[in-house]
Length: 282
Image (cartoon, rainbow, N blue to C red; front, side, top):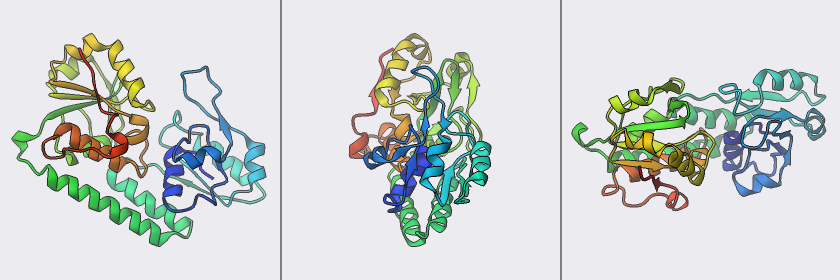
């Protein structure tokens, strides 16, 4: 059972789709996950994000393993609540929390889940293929520091949140220089003036949990603030799919970033992301 979207994606990537008995209301990828029983629901008004465990449904599914996270109480059900509930279930399920803060830790999570589910070989293969794709990107954008564009990744616009955790590493791997984010550290709030003072050449708008059209809509609302940053380009991306969730699709986000930052060196983005990098006019 998965209580966080990126864990759902990982379980399916490890070939465990038939063994995933329950997911949350936010688990929307891959498409097959939509057919699994939902054991959480949104309890706040439309447009906000929260979850509540359906304890009866969870108990009826008799899971052997529950995969959740403790990194963000907004993004998924509280780990403490899950652990407490698991202790009361007749099936006595194991509870695993995936809380990566870096790109390397996201790869380590693959091994953690693979070991817990008896999919060690598939996990090793997934890590190998991901590392190969990372290496291809790094080689494609192996440019001198002077050729690296200055990048600001904004995870929210009101207030302004600078993306942290794995995102600064992704920008670096994609051939950019993150002028505000701190690798491995939480996202943080800053003033618009702080972003302008960093003099970014490219601004990537990636509101946490939003897809590209919603990101562009948010950027349009703050077009005047974004225009005052003086960036050469402002690009809206699908954060929900490729940046907010530290799952298998982060590598697609990395390849998309490399295409955005260095279109001459990386002329094509992954097919599924091709239409999701959207320029915003100030």
